Image (cartoon, protein in one colour):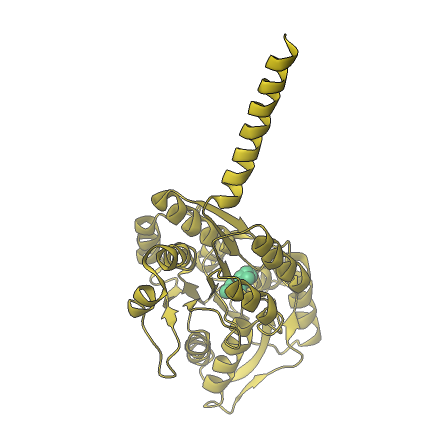
Length: 332
Ligand code: BGC
């Protein structure tokens, strides 16, 4: 090959590589940042990816292995430096994520929160469960199951994330109406590690032979408590009120290990999250905000709602899951 031809070829190849790198940088890309790996977040991911497919845009979904605040901060910073066009974040600590979320906003990258909020940040809106109210619903259900009397252990995956704190606050407020219900301390916190969650539930059973129930705040906790209760042969004796519906919850509800679970609509958190980010970029901030509901304080909060699932309405709920296209291996 002639030297001049080789040089031209080289220039063309470099040009193509440059262009494609440029494309990745310029290409619309939204980031969805969860709190830990597991079936709950897989559903959020599916929602976000479905929205991405519909809109024809690239969506990157990332979850740390377990609750990991530094990794969440690093991820947001990386996405900012990569020039993402928007991000939906579930802060494991609402205050720790203020600076990175605000930095994204300063750089003109729309940032919203999903699943758990960071109200002191400049995030545009929050999409997820009204966690205080949902915690209250769980408390009322627990009181009903216990007949207004008993000892309850609380198990959660985080003592910093706002959704966990708000659920516990709502639960405790509901329980206040029943002076004969006692919440034992300390709260069992596993940082979203399944094996640790089972260990903590087992220890609580051993240390409290008179325990009557577990209130399980996160998706991991219900199945973990059910495993411990089953291993201790205390099915029916120890009640469980949990959050979320995963396959493990469905089996445990059917088996009579979990009495009731507060089902979140996490698919919508991913799906609507991406759609809102895209709308901000396409239609503009004002037009998008005009279409969102405002709360009493003027904040933009989208409550995705909850369902209470028990053995009685399991069949109906499964039909609902099929309608939504949420996969489950459990069948009645
Ligand atoms: C919570 C998430 C949590 C998940 C997995 C859900 O109930 O909303 O914040 O990461 O459980 O444990």
